[in-house]
Length: 74
Image 1: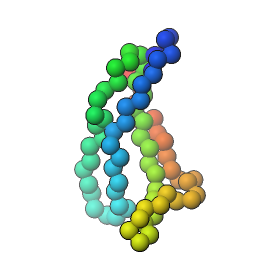
Image 2 (image 1 turned 90 degrees about the vertical axis):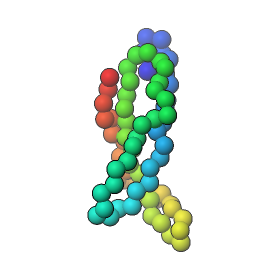
Image 3 (image 1 turned 30 degrees about the horizontal axis):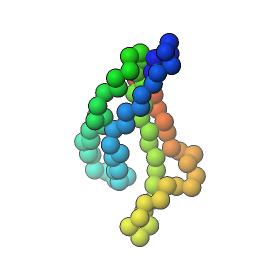
Image 4 (image 1 turned 45 degrees about the vertical axis):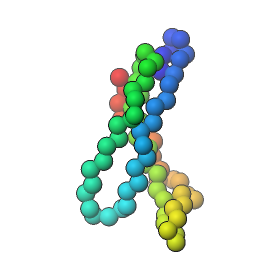
């Protein structure tokens, strides 16, 4: 995000869906490209909870525990 010119660009890494269990898993959250806009870069991480019913995933109605976290600002 360039606050001077008000230009911005959003680049999103692929969504990774993990079960809640005791198994450790390594994942990669690298975006397909890096933003081309000069200025400040924000790295964000969101965590959303789903429940699986009959093989389909549904976002929990009460999204009270979902998180959007600022990981780093460069």
